[in-house]
Image (cartoon, rainbow, N blue to C red):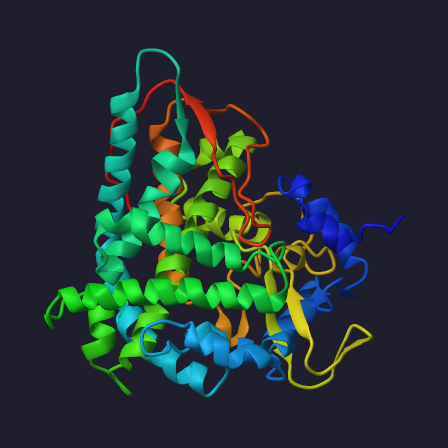
Length: 426
């Protein structure tokens, strides 16, 4: 009987609720070759080195199994043949597109865009918790943190940012789900997943093309409008490139934040002393420290599956990864590496020098981090203040299928009511 590898066990759904003991086993061999021929790297220093190594390509067209499929893949990429989004490109193309996006997104060029959304975030959160309060009967009430809160909040925020009608959520969510599923390493080979990913992204690109056509050339103050007609160096962004990157931002802008908020509430309920501190509100920077520790301890992105390809032979921890090899970087394992982080399996928002891989690193450091941080800080703070005596219904909760974008599908919590809203600083 063939022995099941540690990596196969990590991918198996039966370990979704707690993959961390398996990550401990995986780190004992910093580089392992997976059954599909890719190389899996799991220790902190090695991951950081590779994230900064120009010999590791993010362009999926360099994946060896996809080279022969490039013409087919391009023909499936939607309106006018959508180019890959910027996170799937290398310099100098990556740098040029990222500069255009950054100029219109936020700091340092547009520091006011995110800041101006803070009050709206509070209003959205308040409205959602008020909706829960309206459903609350006398005595104990059961709510689902995911469906009632963690999902609708970031979806509403990213829709406002991109100028997407909130009522279109059922349509674009089906396409977003297809993108996420295409990245799941348990759902077929690399080439097959890339074809499905391209088709799902093309569908989203078509959605954005129809959205822009419906505006009849009228420019709004949203990010998508500014990309295709805005200011800044190298502006405007080519139309097809704007569609491709808007599709990426729509998916990434809510899928990961949903998991971060849900993982955060689950962690706080498992650590009631930290929840009580957040509820008291007498530590102004506690929410910031809680979110940073969550990004290390229970990150929404567990690993980057076959997202990099070696452009040359690279020696990592005594193992040579040959040129042309797909590489998976297990960020969640690296952030709990005891050779870098003291007492890594303890949730401690008072941790000093909290360096983590929750947003990746290098030139592909998470573009949406300036938005995800305040979203999660506001969400967890308001849930802590307003939910009365929250208690987990089931622990562990049911998880989503994906091992890479990991988070509960539902998080049922019993509460004894909802406190009145109070405006608070993020």
